[in-house]
Amino acid sequence: MSLVTAGTDRASKRKLSNVALGSEHADLVIRGGALVNVYTREVYPAEIAIAGNRIAAVDVDLSHAVGPLTDVLDADGRFLVPGFIDTHSHVHESQLPIPEYARAVIARGTTSVSTDFYGELVVGGVAAVDACLDAARTLPLKLLFMLGTPGYYQNFPFGHSGWPTLDDMRALALRPECVGMDDSFAAYIADGESGILDLVDEVQSRGLWVSSHGAEMTGRRLQAWMAYLGATDDHECVSADDAVAKSRLGVYVTAREGAGCYNLAEVIKAITVGGIDPRRFCFNTDVPSSVEIADLGHIDHSVRMAIELGIEPLVALQMATLNASECLGVTRHLGAISPGKIADVLLVGDLRAVDVQCVIADGRIVLADGDSATEIFGKVSFPQAARDTVIFKRAVVEADFAIRTGAPDGRAPGRVIGAFGHTVTTDDITEMLDVFDGYVLADQARDLLKIAAIERVRGTGEIGVGLVTGFHLKGSCALATTFNSQQQNCIVVGTTDHDMAVAANELARVGGGFIAVRDGCVAAMLELPLFGLLSEEPYEVVVAQLKGLLSVVAEMGCDMQSPFATLGFVGLPVDIGHLKICPEGLVDVWSRSIVEVVPA
Image (cartoon, rainbow, N blue to C red; front, top):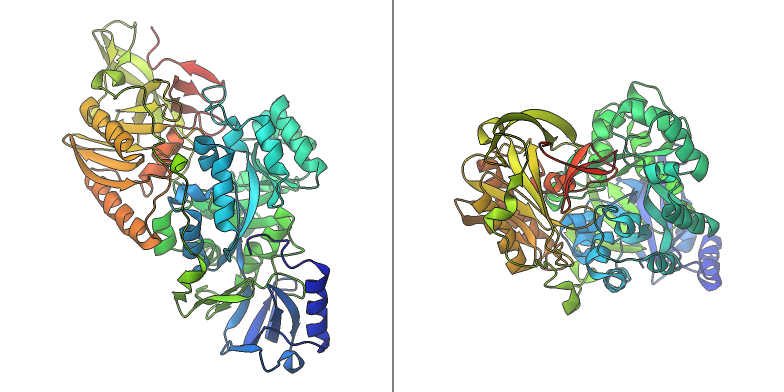
């Protein structure tokens, strides 16, 4: 089941009690393993009895729970670890529809994910969320559904698709799957913005969790944010000092390691160097990469990293399980191997290597010795409305990328977006820029490239253009994406206006994706025809195609690990970083104003 409340009816609970007492038999008993008890941080021999989708008993000897129809699994000396929990992930950013995403992450030991489907919501409305939730109902991956606050705010005041409305958000909060709201923007809360306060009040009045987006909150504003919420978590910490300040106020710090936002190594220093108690720290991927899941892992990768950086294995496992369940308010159901909890159990050969060899999810063996039971995951069929969602008012032309100015010819100081590739924040950099005949010129030799944001959901024709540094593209080429955090615009960067136009128009033709154009021709592309965000191909095919595309991008000179994630986030003009781009133009993020590249 995908709902954490499954198996909590009286009959199911009485069955669990009867199995524990020995008056009924278990469906599955796991023997011969070493239990990792995340409550007490102990390891000792134990057996696990499972009835339906939940654990009935955990003890040294559960022979009384074994009957003629009970399946018995020999753990063969391996460690019995609770399933991992991702406390914050936008699954559409993996480019995988939910069944393929579930198949990818469960193989890595992640059995629960907090997510919102806000990307699909922005493009396809509430019906798109319904399609995703319906596709998830029979999956062994627990989806802890959150209200997608970024979908509600998008780039406001710099653009909005018109949906979801506040009424849409309130209706989604009533869904039985909903456990809270995510990305509640700390800056808006501190400023007393009425819309987000309405949502927070409604969610908290129902006893649901409010998960935060606390980027760059310090001092009095940090205090004001926490004073209103009282309890929250934050996945936006990028330094140990940031994590220490927030954890001291009771914030759950969820260390992020995702595409284009590699923050775990710095955040974990709050524990290893700062000496902060790790019990309020957990993990998230935020921007999950299908390639990185295949090559590095998922939450298992975060656990390994934490161990390598000095965290004791049992502490790191506690962070990925019990801490995460407490953070999200679902500890009654998830986070440990104990009676009454959902039966999510990993068989691990080595606690430091975190080599997940077998996965039991919802009481079913879904992966054994590296082979997943693919028939469990199925394939989702999306409605026609999910297709043909990249809408331009007209074909993009080279002239659309002109940067006009009233400044005189010569050189003038101008504003350039600084992109880094390892974080979603950006810098506001001043460079001496060339001005000729009323236009600001790019300068490939100095890595000052044009970047544009094209509105693609409503077809308004808005195109904002600026300059960016950090992509290091060489020759005649361009990159473009129809994934763009929050408003899902088309973002394109390039060395020539012609290549940029080719890239944008080709993505519109195929319905969305990631693309690399060289010398006016498509060099590589990952098509994402569902909402311009998701592939229809199997996980392995998406990984192979994306690896090929990234190889081409590297040949163009870009050394970013996740260039398309970085490109998308450069087009997020609110709440993260200092200078960004959107269809309305260049944005000074914290003054919330449109600014000129070169003032007249």
